[in-house]
Length: 428
Image 1 (spheres, rainbow, N blue to C red):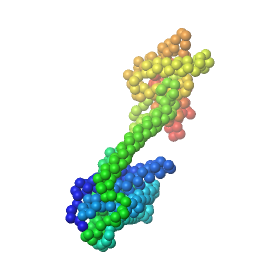
Image 2 (image 1 turned 30 degrees about the vertical axis):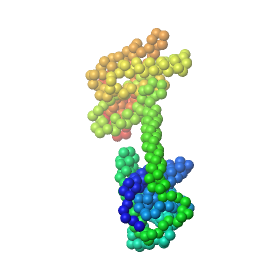
Image 3 (image 1 turned 90 degrees about the vertical axis):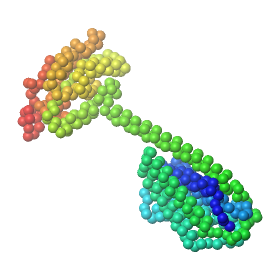
Image 4 (image 1 turned 120 degrees about the horizontal axis):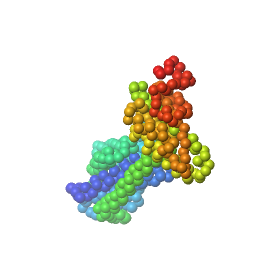
């Protein structure tokens, strides 16, 4: 009955198989990241696309085989072959989309999908309802079944692999995998056509309801359009997922920043200061990098807060913090430790480059504030390692009130006994 294949239809069948495989791989890989109703939608879509694509490839491939008589198909058997392909694809994707998958479930999914493809193929050929019974080549029949099993197992294994991949690398692997899967599906189909042949002179049943001309290029065009829409959906979904991931990253970054930023001034807060101190103290050779903590507290903050509303007070605090920032060296870490208190972490505090800063800080009462809004200050300071070698000790030592004129003078600094760690001596 067969002399040669119609090349355009063979190419069309392969193209349909590639698109079906590509869409199915994406939809299958998407299942593990979804749950509930959304997972059901992706599962149904994946099953429909993969099953319909493989089924379309089969009938387009059959049309590629020339016959001496018009090719027709039984409507019910053709619909049953489509249902077998869709059901098997959906069942396989359901199993492969589970978070945990053992060897037993993987084999079950492979056999279910391969069984659906085999049933779809041979039932689709029977759907012609020829006047003479078919003849089988058992070797080619076994080979076609083996190809179906291998193709199904490879497809599901690739689905599983792609579930752990993201970005352009996943798309590239997906495309190569789709080409390999399409070749395997077409190989199974054309091997199966050789395995099941009809005697010369056999003709399709006269009462078949589907005409063959609708099962070739028109069906291929319809399926390609359907798969193209599905692929557009996948592209949009990829973009949407990336956008959500970026938003989530930005939100996580914002939340993390808020945990270490003072909401009023935008300065690092108490937690940020303690974290910075821990980082500085934990670095290798920390004792070779001394630093100072200068504590600056608005002594009349309570009076200011009672004489103005929250909004006005926040504006004043902002102005004070900005003025402080302007008075400090560029490499000094300024933080708002409390409602009225600020800490300045001064690296290499005895370096001459800080001399001008210390001079301005000793005049802070005259420099920050106005006649309408006078600001008075309390100050204290500590130095590492003289005052201690822990965050708690350094902060506590700096909060001991001292004369403003002592800011930046560390040569005569002494340490109270309670600030000395067990086993240490003063200045150690």
